[in-house]
Image 1 (cartoon, rainbow, N blue to C red):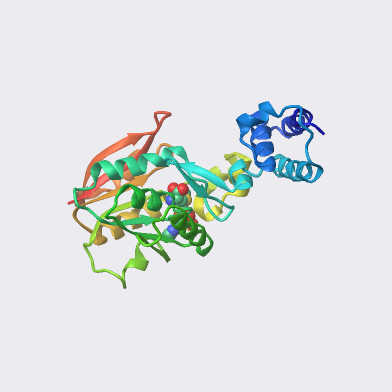
Image 2 (image 1 turned 45 degrees about the vertical axis):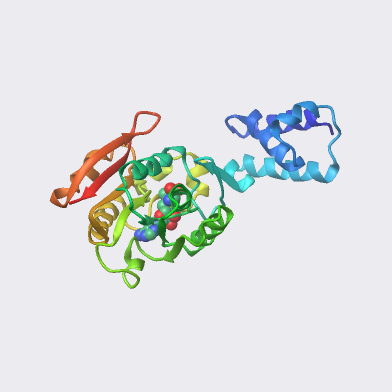
Length: 283
Ligand SMILES: C[S@@+](CC[C@H](N)C(=O)[O-])C[C@H]1O[C@@H](n2cnc3c(N)ncnc32)[C@H](O)[C@@H]1O
């Protein structure tokens, strides 16, 4: 089978399974299976495909047809220009989460070095901050051991493994035996914020493949944000900042939790104009 024939067959199969952007996905999967770049496929349009590589390609197309996100098939996702390993053990980093890093870099006081990333998942926030801030020391927590393993590999991949301590446990509790109160300069978090009632309305790629713990968590968003705020207040220095991603239409509820112990620094909209990141300073 030639390259153009394989692409046409895959495209047809993906379209039949209602995969959006079937052509793009087919090209990306074929390029990966052949070890080429997507743009170089054009130059090899009439090349015959090695039979075993063709089998690998159609197996991947089959996975995509069953709803597996492209990123899990490729095993990677870009975040702020860095490539992160991803697997079904971790939430796939989203472009809107890059605003959490931008807000942290904007609001972190000069010289601030002690940071925590709560619910680190793939480690995209912890690693990006460790790369961007040469003197940073990051504590990254997650309930999921499997996620922490992926995050650890991502830290090593980007050469910041000695700047990040990965800890298993709930929110900021794993820091308790390791540091006193009022020591952190910043806490960042993209916590699970999907309501259990919203799950059935999600795209099947998300609902059926991404970790439920990353989407819904164990307790529901209102309680989790409230606990995060109270733990962060104890662990942050006065003047330290808390940067949290929030879900659709959660701005009022989350900002309403701030109370007297915090100054609201701002709410950042994502590229769709949806309020996405809440930044607050500990009084
Ligand atoms: C939405 S994902 C975010 C992952 C990553 N920070 C990102 O932005 O792509 C939420 C993460 O929080 C973790 N998590 C859920 N509940 C937690 C808790 N109580 N304490 C610590 N981590 C938690 C999940 O395992 C998951 O990795």
